[in-house]
Image (tube, rainbow, N blue to C red; front, side, top):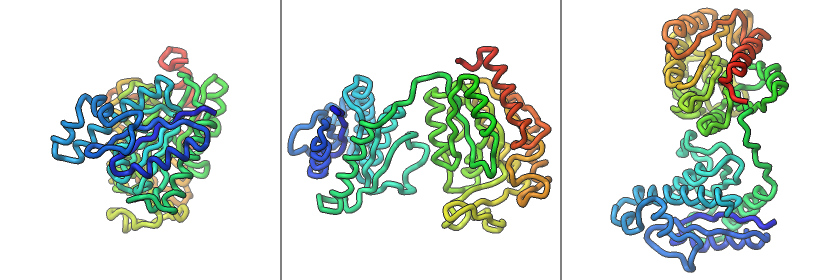
Length: 409
């Protein structure tokens, strides 16, 4: 039970709150490793990692941070140092999880600290701005946990203690219960949506598992795509099957359901073999309880549920999406095959289905043929994306890559 939790925060302004959080962790029989990331003031008692240690780890000093005269610049120094030290402590086995406390400034730093730690290491951010749209999705680590710090802007009180005590239990419970992911090259990263709209994972997952590979399927609704990108960039996958890149279209059309500008780039830049397909390329998802993006307001809107709605793209916009996909694929440094189903790319895009648009599909196919980059092998498939032929074509590419040693086993 002897877990060690790294507790990070600005001890000059949140000394009491961080002290309470530490006491909660220690009261459960664990140890707290304290790290001060403040700049101007000092804690009431020495921390295990001082602010001077943090600044030095960033190749700077507290004096330089103060001398910059800019709080944002100063905190970025501390963020670099804290991230470097957290990674070092974890690699040395000195900590089993991290919890960071802060407002907007502390949350900015907290994201960097958590991003420096591997998947599976418990990462908790207790923040006054948790879940806020000001937090960009492309900065979030794949498995970070956030807890809203209610009533915690200034000083201890019974409301914020409720948040802090739960957070202490959460990070410690996670450290005690976590089953760390196995380090393996035999892992496939796949993107998809639910089986009502995309079904290829149903035959593909067992087929790939029979070949000795683990399959992780990511729900491509913003955060899922972000987690996929984060892990692909870290080299967590032997191969990716990015069959639902709809987040690219979401971002292009101004939807808040985005995985960021860098979606569909991490695997390619890391040289990971990619099999890509345009699942749901023709739809843009947006937050159901908000107004649709301006350019989509005139469309017929399909409400998937109270959280999520979708709009159908016209032919010109589908050409835009084709160009955006190709621009990202052009960055790939590893092998890339683009599977293009000629009969439709989601279950609602079939003859007689409610969202079928033959002219729009034809425009997308035409644009893909025109702009597909030279580093991409374009394979046109005489089937729908949910037909058995699509899964068979994906497996054929994969099996050939395994036989050639392109996909490592």
